[in-house]
Image (cartoon, rainbow over all chains, first blue to last red; front, top):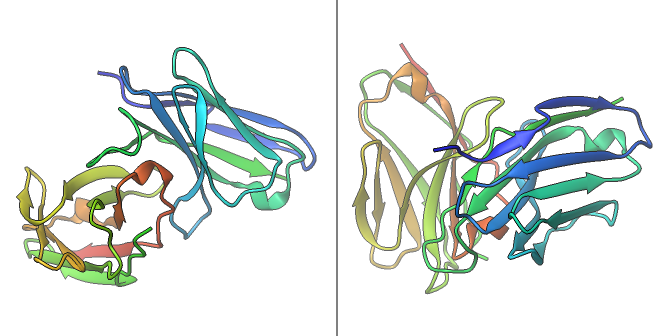
Length: 115
Length: 109
């Protein structure tokens, strides 16, 4: 069975540019979460989507946005890139959200370098 | 949200049992405790999850005392490949949780 897949795996952008990261959840999973992981720190929660609706948002500026499509895949968009946006962006999927014992499964991430 | 506290780092030797303890003093009634393992340049991998007492799977055991204010991840007979960062989460919905900095386990030959 395919796990959570993310694309691209690596990319380099220039300050001020825009980036779109993509995520396909595990088949049957309806919830997708996005995380940012800076080197040396744990993953920081950005967004959670469930059934195409935003169900949670972390402490990130409005330059960060996301959406979920009818097939439950998701995109994370970041506008006006800053050097500090350089990080590993992780996508995680789960069957649903908010239920007891809900388990999330992560993809391998997209490495973004802003120069 | 249940704030968790873990040791920053631990060292062990191959073949030893490793126990990593996580404190979650304000855990809520409905919160589960979940542990993840992360290797460099990879996404976190689910290890084990529990609510109370003891849970065991093919890779680890999780011990949760009756007051649920802490939990201990037990890795039997570690190998060099178990060198990784281990995170504990105490939340009903880990899909919304910001991870702490985890415990960096270094297994030495």
